[in-house]
Length: 88
Image 1 (tube, one colour):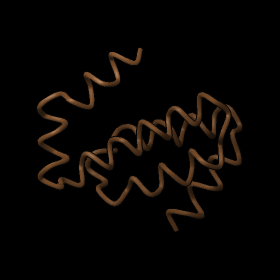
Image 2 (cartoon, rainbow, N blue to C red; image 1 turned 180 degrees about the horizontal axis):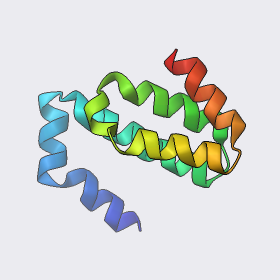
Image 3 (cartoon, rainbow, N blue to C red; image 1 turned 120 degrees about the vertical axis):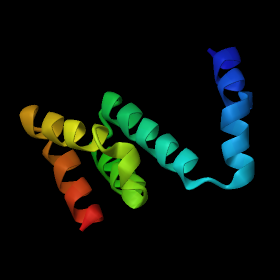
Image 4 (cartoon, rainbow, N blue to C red; image 1 turned 90 degrees about the vertical axis):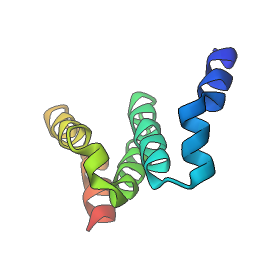
């Protein structure tokens, strides 16, 4: 797993995005962190991180509504409320 993380970070498109300062790289990292936080039952953190990732909303065009519906369907109210409060 460590080798996979190192490879992903050192992968050419990833490093090019970091070097050029592209905000999309940060937005995708925040969205991945939000999914990870949801998987680890950190609902408030997931909501905040997902809301912060909306500074570039076209990257979350499908993910953000899906996670919102997921939060509503499975009654993850802390996630839904923290996302709404932070995004608002």
